[in-house]
Amino acid sequence: MLKLFVLSVLLCATCHVAFAFAGGLLPNGNFEFGPKPSQMKGTVVIDRSGIPEWEISGFVEYIKSGQKQGDMLLVVPEGAFAVRLGNEASIKQKLKVIKGMYYSLTFSAARTCAQEERVNVSVAPDSGVLPIQTMYSSNGWDSYAWAFKAMSAFIEIVIHNPGVEEDPACGPLIDAVAIKALFPPKATNKNILKNGDFEEGPYVFPKASWGVLIPPNIEDDHSPLPGWMIESLKAVKYIDSAHFSVPEGKRAVELVAGKESAIAQVVRTTVGKVYTLTFAVGDANNACEGSMIVEAFAGKDTLKVPYQSTGKGGFKRATLRFTAVTNRTRIMFLSTFYTMKSDASLCGPVIDDIRLLSVRNPRLV
Ligand SMILES: *[C@@H]1O[C@H](CO)[C@@H](O)[C@H](O)[C@H]1NC(C)=O
Ligand SMILES: *[C@@H]1O[C@H](CO)[C@@H](O)[C@H](O)[C@H]1NC(C)=O
Image 1: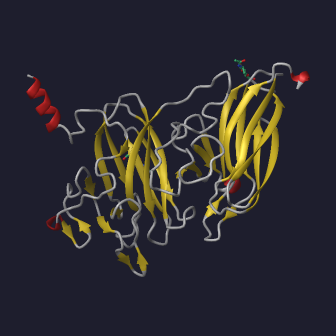
Image 2: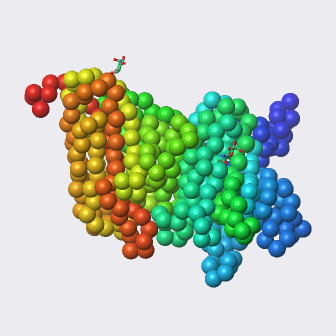
Image 3: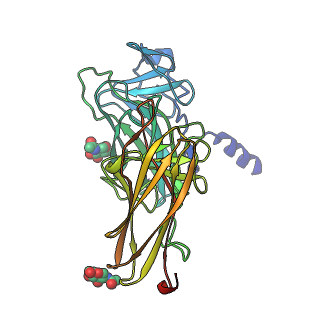
């Protein structure tokens, strides 16, 4: 009986159908296992199940790091292989997860042709279209986060290029696909804001030194940064202490898109009560230099916090004191200016450790 059990466990060592996926890189999530020569024509994968663990459809190319496209040398962030999704192409993988749980999905992508490229990520019934732009990193690759709620224990993750270009081979490169279960934090008596220190958020690749872009949540209400909404048009960047300077804990947010992106949270407040919003403003130690200003909003009250960045890390704290005039107050942060590094990639001030508390006895403070 025991032998049989051990045997079935061994047989199932690579079988992710039996157990819920614990999180991290998906099986063959970095495409290091590729098609056999008979499943390819040049770089194009011609067998639907040619890439182990994945099912493909449409014009999918299997790309080796160092491969040339015109005068461009294609580099791959994780390992030596990636895929390129041509017109209407998609890759998908089935996975067992925990029903009802929220997950973030992180993947790395690079744009290869001149026009703006997009990918549609979906886990039924959720989907989101993410623009792939080369504005935020030096090497052309960025990691993107998205989130979904598992409506069933068996899910199918689909990454699709909805584009239709003249050159069918034009389309984004995709590498390193991972998921992570999210545990939405609650407000406490030490902080009315949820996840004010940003410690709960999307999966960050241990080797990716460019952070994770959190796109604006236009189409869904599940944020990969629990508690927070990304408003406006552009992304914010989620950064980790392994690769960046972070004011508090292991994670923070870099406001990389000036006034075009803002992060916000709506909290319950009591009309007439006095509150203090404290937060840290700094730089990520990523050579992002210059005069920066972070604008904090609490309803109609605002505070502009100037920060002179030498690009070498550091931070200061600021406090916005306000009296609530409504029973719900929108707390929001944005960067007044665009900032660029010497390689023209976008960067900006870092915010972290945001706390909101009501003041018991305002006259004593
Ligand atoms: C994205 O994909 C999902 C699932 O296939 C689909 O329902 C949705 O309409 C697509 N969105 C766009 C904008 O193409
Ligand atoms: C909050 O304010 C709105 C409008 O001012 C009101 O309709 C609502 O009942 C209030 N809610 C609470 C819980 O006081």
